[in-house]
Length: 281
Ligand SMILES: [Ca+2]
Ligand SMILES: [Ca+2]
Ligand SMILES: [Ca+2]
Ligand SMILES: [Ca+2]
Image: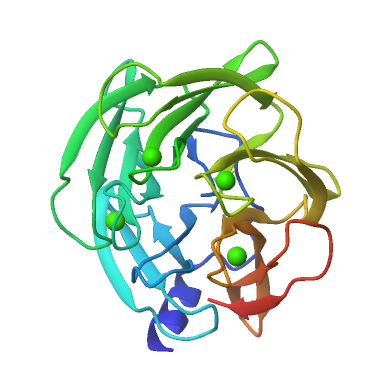
């Protein structure tokens, strides 16, 4: 509770709209001001937890919680430079998610730093992949084996082009394909619970318009629906109930007394409807 209170006091006095269209973003990781929103399997026990990453200091400060409920942080640690965007991925294919960053400030190519555990420490891999003017850096299990690979989503005319790589390191993309338009944002998740991750885009209207595709390829969406508010919310994805299927959610800043706090609204189905879990963290 102490952590939650302290963090609430450092937030802006008025709500900050969700912000996902200004600089490089990492899929699933929208932000409010300098506060990125992240989700991941921090404890390796299946199912995703929640978190946020504060980029207001010289290093990125991560605060994560395993349970989908209000309460204290399970871990707080520093990883990554202020200039980099945070990433979450199961790089080694074992024991839950690790962390990473993608940095646009290191030259023409995006610089990636990868760590297998969600904790402070040195990057285990540092490499370049994708152009620094990519719209999104993404992590996903594109081939359904050996954990997450990497990828970028770049603008190509009015559309998005995805360039994904199965290995976590420098090299050529394993697949290049179009999906979505540059007016949208990009997400990754295992929407059908089999054969690794699929892809998605989210558009901002009155609602957040999710378009989810099970295959990592060009084609139409398998699920299209609205969830949350397109005016105020950060979209998130994750396996909230631990059944192996990733679904959607949102984070919204709400005023509680004099404090502005993050409200998480998570849904266990990839369809329109009410949130199954709502809490503040
Ligand atoms: Ca891992
Ligand atoms: Ca893989
Ligand atoms: Ca899948
Ligand atoms: Ca699930």
